[in-house]
Each structure stands twice: as C-alpha cells, then as structure tokens.
Length: 374
Picture 1 (tube, rainbow, N blue to C red):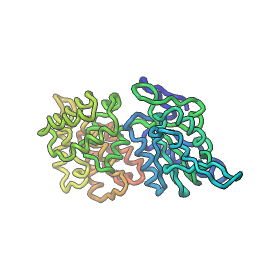
Picture 2 (picture 1 turned 60 degrees about the horizontal axis):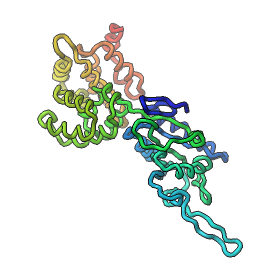
Picture 3 (picture 1 turned 180 degrees about the vertical axis):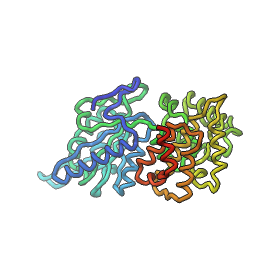
Picture 4 (picture 1 turned 90 degrees about the horizontal axis):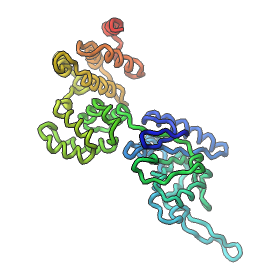
C-alpha cells in the first residue's frame, strides 16, 4: 500500500495497466467470495488514478462481462448523513418500538455476485467519509447490510496536484486494498479496437506514446476527440476544424503532436485488414516501402511500429478468425525488407507467445530469416 509519487500526485498500491488491474480484481474478488462463503467479510478494493483514465468504466465493464449485478454510488453527492445510512423508521409499538434505518435506493437488494462501486470516494465530504468507515469494514450500516456475495470497489483521484479531494487517514486507508490505474497506450489501443474507435486515433496513440505519457491528456479526452473526428473523412483537408476539435479536448503539446500526425499523412497508414485480406501483396509491399522512407537515408520506424502494433491487436482480438490468406500475408509482412530486424523479431515473439496467433507465424522461410537476424 506504499504510496508512490508521480510528479506532484500521490498514487497508492501497484501501478497497473487495464489488463493488470483485471487480473488483480480476478484474484481479490475470488478470494473475497471464498472468504464470505466461510463466514468472513472480504476486503474492499480502491482503484486510484487521474481523471479520465477509465477507472469507473473498467469496473462496470468487468461486472457486465461476467454477468454480475452492478450498483453505483457517488458519495460526493451526499448532502446529509441520511443519504448514507437511510431515513429512520419506527418498528414495533410501545416499549417494543425501535428506530431502524431504511436502506437508501443505492443499496443493492438481490444476492450477488455483484459489485457496489463507490465512485470518486475521496471527493466526498469528510463527515461522509467517516460515516462510510463501518460499511467498508463490516459491510453494514446500522439496520442494514449488503446482500451476500457483493464486492465493494472504490475509485479515487490521487492527492496532490490540482485535485479537490479529501485526504484519507490511515484508519480509512487500512480498510482497503489499493491499486493505481495508469494509462498504457497499447492496452488502450486494444480496448479501442474492440470498441470501434476511429482507427486513425488508434494509430496516433500508438505513434506518439511518449508524448501522451508526459502530458495531461487522458484516455477519456482522447476517446471523446476521436468520436468527434470519425465523421471527417479527410483530416488534412479539414485541418482547421480538426485542430479546433483537438484543442477542445487535449492539452497544447498533444494538439501539436496530432497536427503533425495529420500533416505527415500518418492517419493514412495501411490498415491491418488491408494487409491481411490483400489478394495481391505487391501493392501492400509498395505502400510499406513508401511509408518506411524518411528524409535522406532515414527510415520511419515509428510508422512501421504502429502498423505492426495494430496488426498484433487485430489478430489477437476476441472473435478473430484467421484464414490461409491471412497467414500468407502476415508472413509476407514480417519478411518485408523495410522492417528492421528488432521490429521483425519483436512482433514474431509476441505473436508466437499468443495462444491463438502462434499458428499464423509458423513458416520455414520466416524461421530462417529470424535466425539470420539474431
């Protein structure tokens, strides 16, 4: 749980990309369910991260993919303690009358498995946070408790920087397991490919990962921009509008990088499906040669690396069905003269390590080329 500083920001727990966070959730939730089955309570998980990195979306998607129930609560919206513990009701008569608290509408009622998300936990008022301590430790609040087989997950923005958050004291922190979600371009690109995000946007993120790692741009702001750009067929011809839209979502450094990306024609990189489905690979090979040419004798490895990354994402996505043509064209791509040996070897290694993609790269000529490259 040791905090780590990221500039002025204070992150807690392991710093994980989305796949790493899902693996952690798998383990924590399975352990919690086993603990609850034997009379225990389990431990809530708090996911830290900057705004727009996808904390809430990942938790909701995790529940949906598994068919789990999902309940959402934003404690920062609570004005009164009654919003937290519910309104009092009197049960019984005379000396037997007792005050009980009816659970608020955000409290789940059906048996799990399910996830109760307490979103932006540390944006709540300090008084609300103190009131949540019992729920986090015992899964109960006065007269009501969570149904069986429910997990509590919190999200929080890091302390420090410009975030308006309420610091959590040790009594609160030690009731939770902690992890920090960080933006990882390849993980975002894998999600974006499945989500139908504009391919030109995915190519930009994969081409300029170092820029995005150093700016305030988030996964959410990128996705919002690419949704607005999707109807624009020719980005360069509409550059003024494109830059206006980019400035509405991104920081100045990322806007400059995106403008350079458009002016350089990188949004017109050859698509993975165009490579895999090509009936004649010669035109694709010619286009790769063109894209690889830089100024003088320089080679545009950034373009080739982006194409390679997108190819990998395409053939490893859920539901992908390879064909003999795909196999032949993928091997032809890996054997193309423009590919540097380190890029060729790296892509082959990643494909060979993937359970559904390794058969695509079983080829004697490719094996010989790889041996020569070593």
